[in-house]
Structure formats: C-alpha cells, structure tokens
Length: 344
Image (cartoon, rainbow, N blue to C red; front, side, top):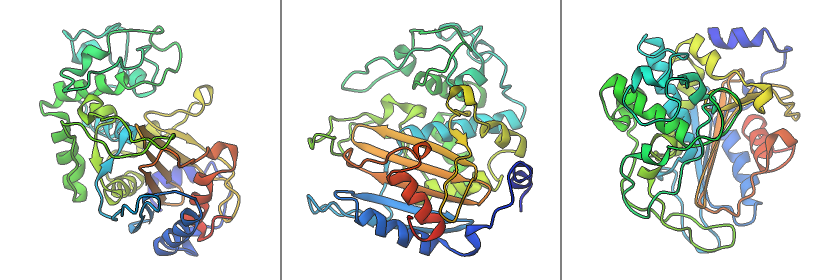
C-alpha cells in the first residue's frame, strides 16, 4: 500500500477490503443495473479499481439519443479539482505558497482584497469573493471582470463560488507563463495519455429539470472553475493518479483532502469525510467533487483508502443523485454497486 494510504489507514479501524472481492468490470455491471432502474437516466459512467478501469453508457430512452463510452462532455465544477492539482504541483515545486497572498502573484490585477486573500483561502472558498456575476450570451472576455464584488472578509466564512478558482487560474498563468489549458494538458494530460478541451463557443447538451432544453452555455465563461471537457476515462485516470500519488506529493495530497467539519467537510477544492457506507464497505474516507452547469450533472467520487473511484455523468437534470451524507439515494447506491458489485 502506498505511503499516503498508510498514513490515513492508521486513523481508521481495520476493515476487509472490498476491492479484493470485486473488480472494475463487476462494479460497472452493478452500476449499470442500478442506473437502468433509474427512470430516464442517460449518460456515461465508470469505475476504477486501482488501475483497472471499466466504463459503460446508457442512451436516452425518451429521445432515443445514444451515449458512447468515449463521449466528451462538460466536466463543469469538477474542473476546480483539476485546477487545485495544478496549484499543488506548483506548491511542490516551490513556485507557489499556500499562505502567500494573491497580490504576491498578481500585483496589478483588479481583485478585491488581493493583499489579504491567500491561495489557501481561494482553494477553501474562504476568500470572501461573491459569486461570479452574470456573463454575457457571447464570448466572455477576461473573466476577472465578473469577480469584482465581495460578500465577506477573507478567511471569515465559507462561500462557494466560481471566482475563487478563476483567480487561481490567473495565478497559475502568471507563475507558469503558459495558458491554463496548456498547463492542464502538459502537466496532467500528457502524463496520463489524454487531451482535454476548454471550448470557446456556446454549447447546448442537456435537458433541464422541467424537460426543456438548456440555454446555451459558454465553457470559456467558466474557465478553470467549470469549463473543461473530457471523457469519463480521462477523469478516472486523474482520480487514480491522484490516489496513487503520481500528480502531487503525499504532503500536498493530505492537505488537499483534509475536510473542515466547520465548513461541512469542505477540503481544498473537494469535500472529504468518512461516512458509514454500510453494505460491504463500512466506514471509509470519501472524497466528493460534483459538477453542474445547465442540465449537465457530474458526480466524481474517490475512496483513497480502498483505491477505488467512480464517475457518473448525466445530461438530464431530472436525474436525482441525492446526497451521500444522508445515507440514501442514487449516489450511495452507485458507490455500493461500484465497490461491492451490488447497490444494497
């Protein structure tokens, strides 16, 4: 077991490892069975047991529209996790410090409280920046223009928003000297064998909760906070590499995945806590990173101590995933299916 897994295993009771009894094929087959019973679900989903990946797709029964396992889709706010990985890579290399201020890297940028807001504040959504203002129905231009308002003092409270990660993207560009998307593909994609996109044109890809077609969404309007496009396989590869310590150091990974109980177990760009998942799993560390833009929904779950991860994409907002912390719902059924080979 890798060093990071050993560190956290010391804090948990000894449990049987479900991975020894199941594999990715069995996990994805059980996920398919559960999703086929979810009326109206359409999308792509997959599971990784260690480095073994399995992916499947279910077409839209309402429209007859197919889905393919290699389909490129909107990662939405899962992009924030990717941005955080890039930040921690720069931390590991000594180019960025978590407790340095934004002003240290962007001295002339028009960002409120830049001299008091740290990189850690941005990663933890404690910068005090207000939510991203409405963007135009067209090319958005410089995203910082939508991040000029504050709602609280830096460090004072948790306020989830896109602007925190938009600013982090600007910091990365200033420090590295390369566009954000270039960094994603060179520093993550090239290592893992994929290329992701950040389209600069409107996209209509999903159905809203009332059954209507979503309004056009501009991925470039969300940038590093929600604009990335890739496949389920790509995202599973990121999850596996992150768990295995191939993307950032063990110290950075532990920092990134430590949830704050006072903020609903928000960690740095993700949520991390140890629920009792019952079934064959019991209590284990769970890392969550959701994404939603328009009618697209993405659920990304990592269980680092079991070396298992799963991704579920839906382009229908009527899919009700529920919340794992409540101990019921589609998401927890899918986690149990992926790990145990059955949703119960």
